[in-house]
Image 1: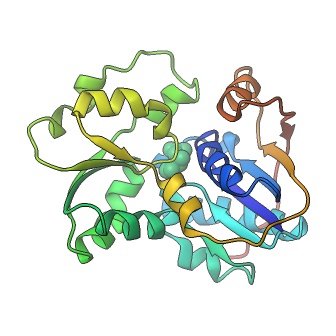
Image 2 (image 1 turned 135 degrees about the horizontal axis):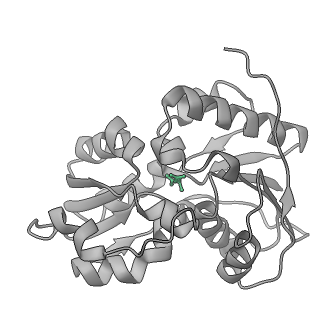
Length: 247
Ligand code: DGL
């Protein structure tokens, strides 16, 4: 099976890793839209355009399924699905399914756009889960090396310190890279949407194991970051997508 996975950058590599761990014998094509980083401060229209271009690219690559390895874009899965016949999987749906059967109250950390749109939160609330949401706009620029200011976790998560919840959802796929720091700071266990997604899908055993990683812009640290995250040597391919998107 050929599986297309996308995110704005390295966050989705966490999702790829979780899916590859469960299903090593598949063909994976990863697209990181690093030229448009961060997605977390983009409008819905911009995210529709970027995501639709990536879907076109995956159609050209003849993938059998697409995984939106991005919390910010996952809230728009129905709109993306209208653009293609290839089945699309998002990370919010399996995370909500997991959380509602394990917890009654959670903190939700995510990008500004995810928190503002409220899709993740409202799906949790609809399922009877109490939510304390918090946007963390500094995390992704820090993790992608877009700024070199150190993170002060106590300050970033201050507003959650005096609240009560049983777990914290790492609602942006970049955040598992800060899992230890977040768990320590809030003193609760975390929920990783990539793991929830990997556990929710069921694929037939494949017969080849292939991985190709495209990034829309390469930076000096990208290759080493991806290799460190995956624990293997890869060769990133720079790929600009210049399709015209009809509105
Ligand atoms: N990793 C993505 C998410 O899960 C996008 C983060 C960003 O580019 O701001 O929301």
